[in-house]
Amino acid sequence: MSSPTVFHIAGWSTCGFYKKAAGVLTSLSVLFPSRLRVVNHMYSSRDEYRAWLLGSSDGLGFRDEFGVAKASKQTSSPFSWIEAGDKPGGTFIGGCDDTLEWCKTFVSPSTVTAKPKATMIPDGHAAGHGYDYDLVVIGGGSGGLAASKEAARFGAKTAVLDYVKPSPAGTTWGLGGTCVNVGCIPKKLMHNAALIGTILTEDTAPFGFTVPEQQSGHNWVEMRQSVQNHIRGLNFNYRVNLREKDVTYKNALGKFVDAHTLEVTDKKGKVSTITSSRFIIATGGRPTPINCEGGDLAISSDDLFSLEESPGKTLCVGASYIALECAGFLAGLGLDTTVAVRSILLRGFDREIADKIGAHMEDHGVKFRKGVTPSKLEKEADGRIKVTFADGTSDVYDTVFGAIGRSADTSKLGCDAVGVKTNPKNGKVICEFEQTSVPNIYAIGDVMEGCPELTPVAIQAGKMLARRLFDGSDEPMDYTNVATTVFTPLEYGTVGLSEEDAKSKFSGCKLEVYHTNFVPLEWSLSEHRQKHPAFAKVIVSKEDDKVLGMHYLGPHAGEVTQGFGVSMRKGDLTFKDLSETVGIHPTTAETFTDMSITKSSGESADSKGC
Image 1 (cartoon, one colour):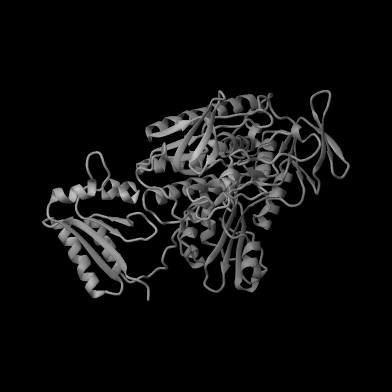
Image 2 (cartoon, rainbow, N blue to C red):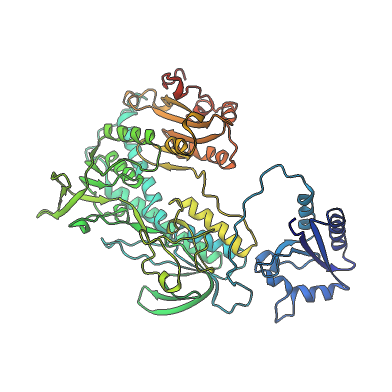
């Protein structure tokens, strides 16, 4: 039999709220003696109670032993907590209302599976630790900024270090990390530019517009300037937001000296040290360079979005979502674009969808060289780059863009010096519940081994970690059923398992796959749109009708998929739930509410009617 919960409640003897909460707890301990033991801490007067709770004016009171902001701000009676051997003070509950709410939960029959808890190793953090900061976040990307602001919200003295090491091509950027400066934001804006171009060429005439021929075509310089101006505005806002949240910002490079000390080098080369009770590594990743002779002639996603001039005829090396997204918008802007593919497109994503994306891109101007990689890059006299491929063929390009993967930015962080374990293959930090092998050092986002390389994942993980560190939460980050979108010309939204992963995890005979090809209403007047219709697929368990994966290929994929991501995260979405949901008409998302054709039926997946 497990030990009873030991519940402590403190207050002064004449406080009505204390007497009410203590009375309910005492009654429950009589009814459930094997499950609950109550320890009363009753003080004779309000002053005596407050002296114990708040401490003297120059000292710390009992409330400060918990290390969480909510406890440190509690001044009223009662003050309640649950005994926990691995936490200083214990697990803080709150005042009267919080205690009564806990009592309700205690006696309520459980109808759901208990939520998982993050079991973390005590890291030694305590009030009055003597270090410069409660928390220092290394890395000013989306995850690091989110974690720092959330920690500051709970009263933690927090600093953020952010220093952008120039790319091999010399490109640098401002505060905000990869997503804002050289990732999601400029990529989506340039993707949108390409979509606008497609509308102008394919949709205007059937909808009754006459657009005069633009002799100059697309203006890369104008687009680039608009995109960079937007990014600089975001950089400025991030700095202002940190100041408003009482987070110290340091434009400096950090390196561990020991588990509580960083050597800090600013942009002028001045070296100093700072100390902290806790650290979060949020340095993200950097593009992996092309490994061949002359590979340094290639640029990466660190450079593409800020090129002063149009990249011109471009070779994209790689078949990742970054490679295909960039190749897609370059071709959409009218540039001669080729993708060198070593094996398959979009490894790790649904194969059927990946093949459809490839076919669509090929029909919209992207050339694919399959089964080859560059073996040599050479600068020509005119500044262009001659690329020799592994099969002996060659071609000349204005720009070679590498997108073959990313590696964690940890090589100069000093992880080895303090014993933080990393994966030797990619430099990623090995964690459990975002806690590294050194208990007071944590990691979030792309730098963490096994973490999906997605900005919203880093943001959510950072917030949830800050809550565990400074607000007494024990809720872990859930990395399953994370919705995402690939912004290729034909956008792809997905949440849950691919068809291949579902078949691998479950027996094939226990799955049903519903699918449909359809033409979105907004495409229906454009002949050019008909060859590659939109597509939707739902993977379902035959045993319990549970939806295991949802896949959507069509316009506004992110907007469509986000809503279904909420349902999938709940973990109990069934195909019946989808079928009984009233769709919004006419939309593409409603396709998921009226799917009936299965792969096993052998019927055509082509949709009929509106």
